[in-house]
Length: 575
Image (cartoon, rainbow, N blue to C red; front, side):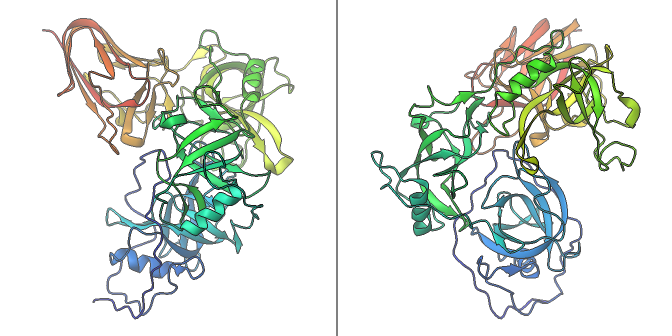
């Protein structure tokens, strides 16, 4: 039956803007919810403002009846289920809320942010049973999943709001000669409201934490404040000086003095920030344009044949900004000193939830000058299946990203760790080698669809090869600063600037057909005559088919920014 609404009050808020640098596909279904069109709702609870938020039942009603808008609203509920809290590159979480805290009639919060839009830095920041007010855009994904779309934020957590940090004295007029300080920028954002300003302003502050440029969109997101612990202003996906793309690996360090310029607003009514993806840009970092100022990621000379020592890895990690992670993966050799697993990982009391292992390595096998391997995988990225697969004294070469982690729960202790890692050699023995990691799929004849291989998201393929029938696919970082990787986003193998894919065979190759990921937001993820080279032979850029007669073909991305997304490859041999 048709549902009847006696009162509906909607607050006009900002047009929603996505806040992730990745175009990650959303889930296709949600546990614990089935739309029931015959269950009436007499009256909405709340009006969608942060002062009077909707309850979950009202939000579900609005979504399933198609009564949501592109404006942000607030919903109050109890966290009933948590799927993921990412404290790494994206800093967001996917969880569910309901009115009674059970998994019945849940509303999904898809890749939402923490208080005031801050990134999650602690996996214990939220828990089941917490009472929250979430602000963002409601949507009905694929007409199956009622949810907060990607980019929402928590306005209140167990009664504590994210806006409790007081602002200092407002100074500045927002001009180049007299930029706003953060307090003035926050005040201006509250005055402007949730619609982006038509006028552009200069804002000056000190970087709160380190951040690294996104190598897909060549912009960067970070917070600035007037003083340590002061109120924050978010510089959201800003470009470099004069709007130029930032190079891969470009970093802002904690304590850098930054001036940004662009439109501003009060996103979702609770997050003062620059408005729009790449709509604002950095003017100076420590008084210099981005072509001169800022910092870059550490150089990486490690290889499988010449890995870093643990001492070198510790030196490299310590040089990073607080909580910064390298964009590169490093080969590091050491001896296992101890295993440090908890009940939710592989261990004596584990339910094998994650199938990985926490352990330490050092150069001499003692517990001095150790590198922490955080949730590392087994040989070639395979899952751990038993606690005794790794023993103290084992010699390993591991491959992963270095991070300088600041443990806020233990006196801000500095922990140098390796993330997203795998063992590539154990006591001198390699794993499967040429399958390029933890792929569990099989190659069908002379064709490969990368998503069918079971690779891990963001699995690194630099220096790795895949056997494809009589051919070998070899991936290399080449002259680039970012390594080729497999991503769940677009389920494709990515080649970045300077990366190469070499296809070789003892047989003569006459044709290679490539399939690439679709365009997204105006970005092309396939080769063009301007961004690539394919040698030798002829490459048809309209059909993405190579033809010729060769035993080796090299596809390179010549453009310094952006990347290709290779979904599948089919090889044909000469008769």
